[in-house]
Length: 165
Image 1 (spheres, rainbow, N blue to C red):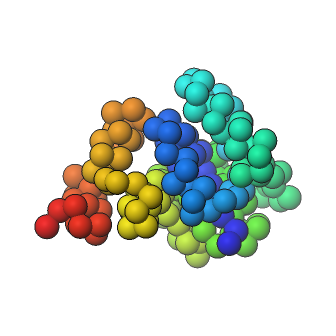
Image 2: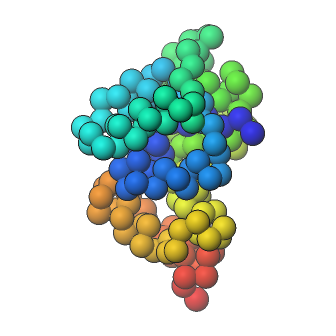
């Protein structure tokens, strides 16, 4: 399965030391150079080192876009990382794009890309028994990575894994 990613899912999972959730589901992730540049500027040293190790071991493959026209056209509505990630997913015929931002998801859907984000990865990990508690993972996302999950989405996610009635 060919999987591409934007910055946010990688940064967020690295920040709370849950990258294993990603690697369990997708052992290799393709990212454009623009996303790698954003990750390389992260201020949290430990997270940056985890991602550098992932690149060194081949879990993260950094690719140059072959055609920047799509990325450039998306820059009018999205940031550089999101634009490049969507362009790479289209260009590489990705089976899945990891993307959290609502605007980016809307644009990705216009290109018929299948999308999931951090919460989707964690729901799957909880169902597979790879993490003991989705509610604890969400709490860590909020407190350690300042990741926003609406209360409506959180309740639906917790219900989906049986952590709420």
